[in-house]
Image (cartoon, rainbow, N blue to C red; front, side, top):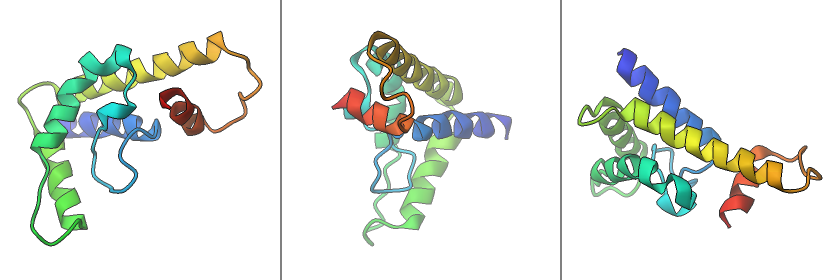
Length: 120
C-alpha cells in the first residue's frame, strides 16, 4: 500500500505540472510534453503507461481509466514511484531554470500556463 501511495503522489505531482493528456482522467504521460533533458528519466513511465492502455471496446470510459491507473500504480517491474518522482522533479527544475533565466514579468501567472509555454 505504501508503494501505491508513493506512486500516486509522484504521478499527482506530474499531473499538477499539467503534462498529462487533458482528454482523459487516466495517469498518462505524453512524452511530447516532456523537456528534452527529462526524456531519459521519464521514458519508463511513458512506456508503462502505453503498456497499461486498456480497450474494452466501449469507447473511452471510467472503467478503462481506472484499469489503466490500477495497472500503472500496482506495477512492480521497476520502482515506479521513484522514477515518477524523479521525472516530476526534473520537469519542475527545468521550469524553474527557464523562469530564472527570463524576465519575471509573468511570475503571477498560473504555473501550468508557464509549463505549456515552455513546451510549445
